[in-house]
Image (cartoon, rainbow over all chains, first blue to last red; front, side):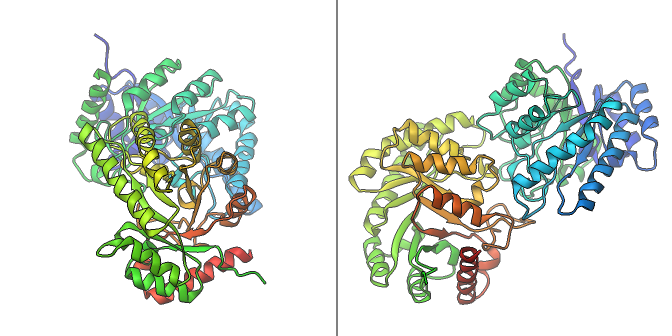
Amino acid sequence: MTNHLSKLAIHTITNKPWSTEQCIENYARAGVSGITFWRYSFEGRSPANVGRQAREAGLEVVSVARGGFFPATTAAGLQRAIDENRRAIDETAEVGAPSLVLVCGAVPGQPLQASRQQIQDGIAELLPYASERNVILAIEPLHPMYADDRSAVNTMAQASDICEALNSHPNVSIACDVYHTWWDPDLEREITRAAAFGNFTAFHICDWKTPTTDFLNDRGLMGEGCIDIPSIQQWVADSGFNGHHEVEIFSNRYWSMDQDEYLKSILDSYQKLRGS
Amino acid sequence: MTNHLSKLAIHTITNKPWSTEQCIENYARAGVSGITFWRYSFEGRSPANVGRQAREAGLEVVSVARGGFFPATTAAGLQRAIDENRRAIDETAEVGAPSLVLVCGAVPGQPLQASRQQIQDGIAELLPYASERNVILAIEPLHPMYADDRSAVNTMAQASDICEALNSHPNVSIACDVYHTWWDPDLEREITRAAAFGNFTAFHICDWKTPTTDFLNDRGLMGEGCIDIPSIQQWVADSGFNGHHEVEIFSNRYWSMDQDEYLKSILDSYQKLRGS
């Protein structure tokens, strides 16, 4: 019998009411195998110590969220983003995670093409720094409803275009979240393309509820919405990806409930997916 | 000096608090040249009479919104959609509009590919009926945030794929709304493609606000948001489209304000676009 949880990771933001230590203890006790840290999880702590605690508890540190937000309308703004990303890369290296997820950014009213160029240029500038620290910069395409101020990179194809423009450098790759990409008619093809060029490094799961009532914090638990997650999991497996399936759920509703009960629901819904 | 309003049309839903007759009178008096009717505008009226009133007031009847919603999980549901679309085609012919805009539909949880096939099959089934009545079925790609329950057709490319699969039949075409398509990295290319195959028949404008607080009814007035409308207008003009620019704004905020003042704002913002 396979261990159904051997590829399950959870982002600390999913259980936002819990402290970093509670996340580590509770995920490990539940049999979850990986953890992803939102950067706030390091506040008042040493990332190196947090990483050690996680590994000692039996958890693999999968990634850190998040860097990015490259676009700006001034040279000073562009530089601030580079500096902030260097700090995020440092924390990623210190905690011992292989990758830093990038929410690439956008400036409302600035042409998307200009923002996209700034994103690519920013990543290019960071690559030597990331490479020295063994950190992969994982571009996460965001749903087009965030194109105004969160990311001008909204499809897997755009993320692959950037990776390939940077010669599929080993320190740039893609984080694919079903919430952002499920609607894309080219999703299967683009997962295959990204993996074929070595540009697929992370896979996030949750669900899209009908109706969705909040642009940011109304994501659903797997199976609760309309996303055909098993099919996407199959495409990802077929592409050769063998990493964690990371649960990342922003939800005012779930954050307000008992987090122990919620963690049980996460495990249940994940296992139902795997069994389907 | 050109008449800046000669290509301006307004959807009646934009001024939802007004009756059909108020829309006709006020648009005509303001110098607007075209009107698009939401189907509720015909309630308790004869579409033929409404069309005559509009033309007598000097307005061109541009289109009718909306048909579509083809996907269903039962044969009876699929048939109901066809029947309802036949009624919408009848009303479009009666009011004297050249086209019926289609919000194509989706069923939460049904694979998108299945919904897309039902959409294409539904349009194919309606084409002879639409052709006899000189009505163009205008597929409107909807923003991906509506892929769960409003439309499984979310890009211009998908809409062109359907038109071309139907041999670019003269009675199927595309309505392009900047609200739904502005984020698309392929937008310019896909406008050109649609027009080149004779598949570009309508152009809708409004704006995307930052932040947007409601999934349906928080659209902005042109210039109020982040969409680069002048560039898109240029692409549309370059493609050879010479039809109306239709203002379609769903907005709880604007619906609650004085509609005469609001109409002045619409004209102002439209003219500022044209002058930019």
